[in-house]
Every structure is written in structure tokens, then in C-alpha cells.
Image 1 (cartoon, one colour):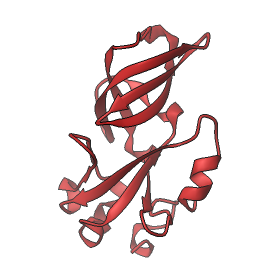
Image 2: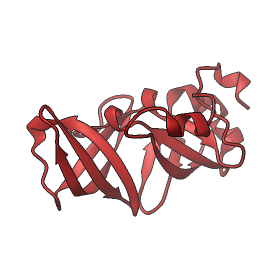
Image 3: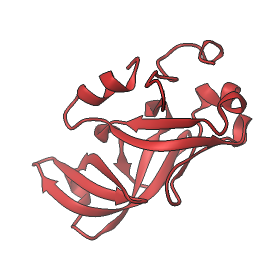
Length: 149
């Protein structure tokens, strides 16, 4: 999506949003959010991470892009507590809390998550979107990283 407005109304359930800042630069840059929420900066943004370090951003990711499991290469993970679980046949719609952020995830029903369970959610960094907190403009809309700054 080109901006947060579009990202917020396309899809059901809608995209998850978390306020973050970039800490560091290059390969060690991380997205730091509330509490202990921390993910590696997507590869496509590492070239400009130094330019956006400390800037208020919003990370966005769709519920269907989360899965239960430890981080894999080019992904990040975070722990969350399941508050509500909706069983939908071959899927589970999880309403979870991670670092005081309400997040929705759609995962396979084989996980059989129960309310109160602590789960590790895995997010491929290629599916992570970043938006400028002030303007709502996307930093990850498929444009080359050099053109984003």
C-alpha cells in the first residue's frame, strides 16, 4: 500500500499497526516498539536505516502473514498472549496482546491455541510495511530503497 490509510481499510481483518523507531544502521538496525517489541529492519530498508534512525514510524503487517513458530531466516518473531481465539474450521483467528498492543493473527487450526496461551508469532520481514508516523506515507511500497529517503 502507498500509505497507512489504504493499508488500514483493505483486507478483513485489517492490518495490524505498531508504533516503532529505528535503532542503529545497516545490518544491525532494529525496529523498536513498545515494551520488548523488537524486530530486525527489513533488508530493503537497511541502506537508509541510518537516515531514518530515531524517526517515529508505524510498522504494519497483515494477520494472515503471521504464523506460530520461531523466527526463520529473514523474519522476526515476538511473544504474545492469546486473549480470544475464534476457531474457523481450518484456521484460527487469534486476538493476542504483545507488549500491550492488540494484534490479530490468522494461523492454521493445527495449533489449537487456547485463551491465555503464550505463543511465539513469526513474521517474514518481506511482509512488513513501514509508514511515516506523521504523513502516513509508506517507506516500503516496492520503490527502491534509495528513492525512499
